[in-house]
Length: 321
Ligand code: PBG
Image (cartoon, rainbow, N blue to C red; front, top):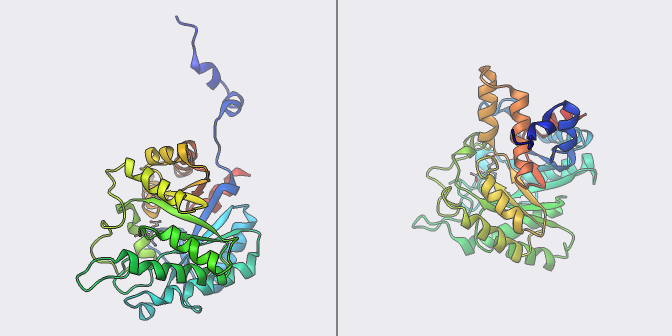
């Protein structure tokens, strides 16, 4: 028998711990949180809620106490506040801006406060940008709105703005807008490689999305690996401080590609559908919930993520103690 026996290094729990390559840390986890006018549950995301302003402040305090790295805020306006352009997205009293103020008021600088910079929650048609009369999502016309939205978010207290609409040139436009306004310390976390994924389904319930149709003219085709790298390289060239791959678990090849070339931290977003599937299987007793959650996030870190956005962030942190 060949003396090469890899099992030697698996012989005891202590040995396995010694040789373990990665272990998710609380400080690299970011919890996505929904802020709405009224709190409420989300049936396809058991354990996740829409928070009102008081609730979102408490959620931020819990995230800070758990030692998490950050919080990513999504705004859920009332339907009556949605319009063609998504103007509640950049209004000073829009729900996301009020949520950001509540969160910063609660946690100050103890937690990195991030804002999703995208119009889809705020538009009546549910697209991530302005729609032309013939039904196209207008790239260049949308960029100005993203800049206005980013500025409103920074003024409301965001440490990090996160353009997620997949318009070409969005990072460059936001960077220029921030510089002009003197916000030279605001970081941009770019959703660089974002695929048109069926795994966003539960999120669309969470934000009461009005979208009919799909986002395939701006989000990427799940079949394309090279294109993920290209998107990340463009965002790096445009001045992104961090780049993200999304979804995470089914796109580990893209994540590894991006991690191999990025000279800035790489984030991965374990999205709502990835969450919902494990929750649903665990509820039926078909899978060991805690083991599956831990394994799913460990795999994302192993593939090269420096930062992981996950709805399990707080619970994962509690298991690390
Ligand atoms: C767009 C956005 C989406 C998600 C995060 N930002 C939805 C979409 O692109 O349709 C999905 C996140 C998730 O599924 O958890 N603002």
